[in-house]
Image (tube, rainbow, N blue to C red):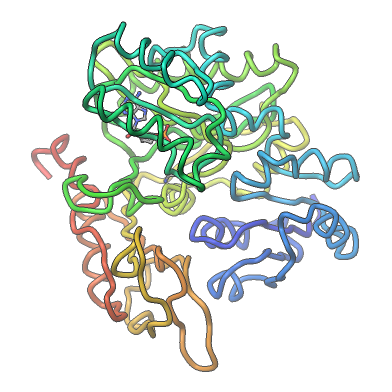
Length: 431
Ligand code: AMP
Ligand code: GLY
């Protein structure tokens, strides 16, 4: 196979990890990243291309002889970037708009799961103008907590777990009154609360064949012990021990298989990365949500564990020959600790100089997210700043390796959770 020029869309820690993995490919020609970050600038060429301007992305791809556009984040996919590029004969890795509805519309995802008998929480959808109807449904169930979800993309802020009718009433009003939420909240999903342990499974699909890449556990809350506000993710580890052989087989048979065939039946075959958020309940695994992309920071632990050539897999998916591929993983555990700006996910200061990156272990990986390069210093520029990824033969070793190195990296007001991976340790009482 010849060399392929790639344009990678995105600029977070996930995209730094994707760029790092693509760089190891035997098939990579030139790599461009838009917009990228100082981490990706060390690997390929960053471009300040406006990624919501599909016409500019297509023009750039033609000018630079791009053979594959790889889309990292969900927004451009949900908005139809893959459709636009395909219409201009530019190969793209990522689902088309109709298929990306699995993430872009929770109402679509729920009715899809109902139609194809995919296990998930019981639900009903309502217009946000009709809070009375939603409240009478909540009353008729009479069980708390109850989960409310905005139908559209809300950057992780559209889900409320309500412990009482009063709280549900306040949140239902908030969907209409909150400027940031209103756009995503024409329809509201009211859903049964599921008890269990959460895990995420990452699948690559060419529309017809799907292969599980790996599983992981995210840590969404800002504070130790899963307390405090929700964030984009404060850390992750893999593999997730709750995803034992039986559970994994059940997930493939009852969830992944029917999802891929269901999307074919809907005439929206799913091509790209499918991220299935799961709750492992006492009655088996159930879908919490679908996402149409890699998780961030789950991607940062999964890709270093993947032995396959990532570009080869992506091209196989794009060209619909994934049936010829077998996923291969190394046997290691990996842990990713997100170093964030103090205050995140609320307000925080930027522009803090980052020190110590040259003193970390050789096998340790640091993927950059909210950083900018000034003349002679790397500065913080966002909420989640760095992703520190360590590895080990046991989960304990991976956690220790990661935290030993986190302690070598400094910036003013740096904040990180101190318990990433700890919930997995109970599965390994002997270490
Ligand atoms: P989502 O954006 O749908 O992933 O929801 C964000 C988080 O809310 C999930 O990661 C879960 O921790 C929690 N959550 C969402 N739906 C449910 C549910 N039906 N039962 C319990 N927890 C849920
Ligand atoms: N880490 C959660 C997400 O990427 O949605």
